[in-house]
Length: 148
Image (cartoon, rainbow, N blue to C red; front, side):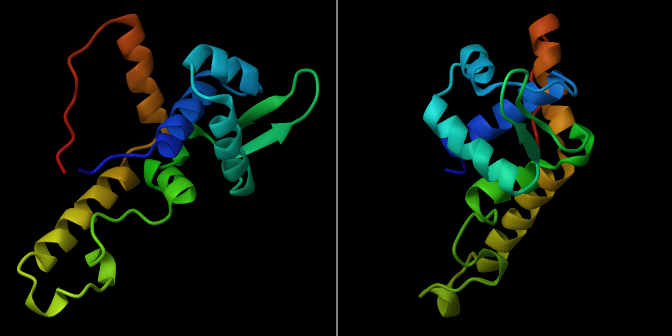
C-alpha cells in the first residue's frame, strides 16, 4: 500500500497549519495543542525542515517556526523527500535494481506509476493542501480524488 509515514503526515499537517497562520511564528506547543500530534516526533520533523530551510526557527518569547517561502511555492514532493528520502513505489522504480529485473513483467508499468505519483506530489502545493483543509472546516465540500 502506498502511504505517507507519520513523519510526512505530521510534517505536512504542521506546515499547513503554519501556512494558515501567515507570517506569524507558531510554537511547537501551539501546533501540538491544535493538531494533537506527538511533541517529540514533531520536534524531530521541524528540525529536519529547518535544516532544509523550509521553516525558520526563532527561540524565546514570541518565537517558534514559520515558513521561509510562500506556501504556493512549496511542493508536497519536496517536503516528503526531505522527511523520507526520494519518493519511490518499488525498488526497481527510477532506475533501481532488484533480483527479478531480468524477468520482471511489471517493471515498466511500475516506473510509470512511480512517475505519476511523483508528478502529483510535484504539482500539489502546500497552499493547496492548506486551502483544502480550511474549506472543509468552514463549509463541507465533497472530497476530491487525485488520479494516480
